[in-house]
Length: 214
Image (tube, rainbow, N blue to C red):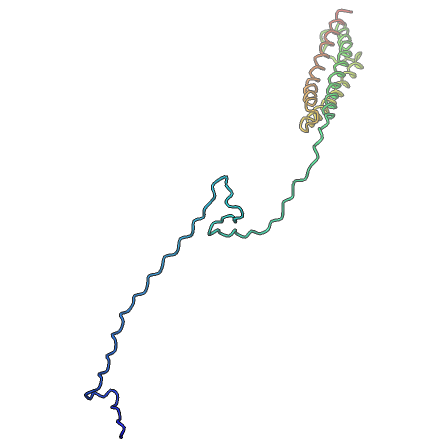
């Protein structure tokens, strides 16, 4: 028996199967649109007066900005405790007032003592002198000692008064006996006026007594 050789594949001879056609290409698929971002989950805050579930960590906001960096600052030192200032002494004003009183009393007392004999001596000289001789200062010769005493008292009181005024001003400015300093100013300013009034009144009384021959 002889073997039969099969016909070659793809041969278009009769009795063979026709080849299959290729499938049509698939249509292009459009790209999918991007998905929107998911919203952040809301943070629930427990109502006032409640503490939430025990053991649950505290809720924090989703996006908390980090605190900016700051340079370290050295701690400030507290102000030093100072002792309470002591009350200023009023000795400065007291001394000024004492000086003013001395400048007021001593010259006025000397003026009253010396003024009367000065006036009496001048009155006696006016009785014996003529009217033309009243302008001659020689009528003061018998009482020159009393006049010198009155002058010394006046200048001594002036020096003490100036000292009292200066020290009184310092006491007022520094607050060391302000009331006494003000009183010292007043007394020291009035003292020369009182000296002049007392001397004039005493001398006038002495002139009247000397002219009358007492």
